[in-house]
Image (cartoon, rainbow, N blue to C red; front, side, top):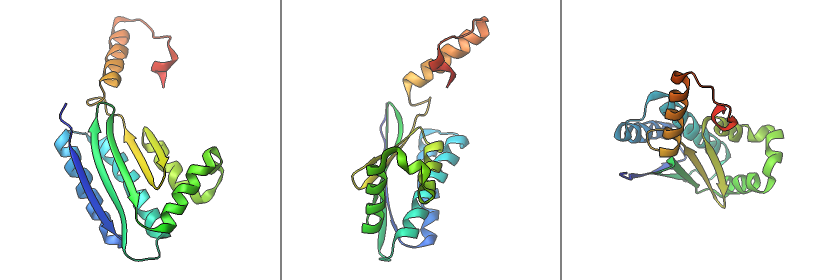
Length: 162
C-alpha cells in the first residue's frame, strides 16, 4: 500500500474553510475515494474548524490538520493552536461519556456519527474513516457478506450486521 501524507494549516478566518475542501478533494482524488466518504470527511473537518473558530479569541493561527492513510483507512489528526480550543478538547477527554448529555458538545456528536472513529488525545483530535478499498479486513468482510447473500446463506454472526 502506498501511504500518502498531507498537511494544512488554517488561520482564524472563516474563508479558510475553502482550504479544507481543496485539502480533502486532493486526498480523495489521489486515493480514488468516492463521494459518500468525501462528504463525511468534509462535514467532519468543517465542523471541527467551525467549532475552533467559535472558541478562538486570539485571531491568529487556528489549527493544523495532518492526514495519512494506513491499512485501517484514512486518518486526520487535528491540532488546535488556541488555548481555549485545547482546553475544550481536554475537557471532552476528561468527561468521557458525560459529553453526550451536554449541548455545547453537539459538534463532537456530529463527527462521531460521520466518522468510524474519533479519539481525543491530549491537545488533539484524531478522526478515522475505515475505507473498504484501503482497509483489507473491512473489504474482506464485505466480500464475505456478498458471497453469503448470493449463495442464499444467511449470516447469523451479529458482527456483520452493524
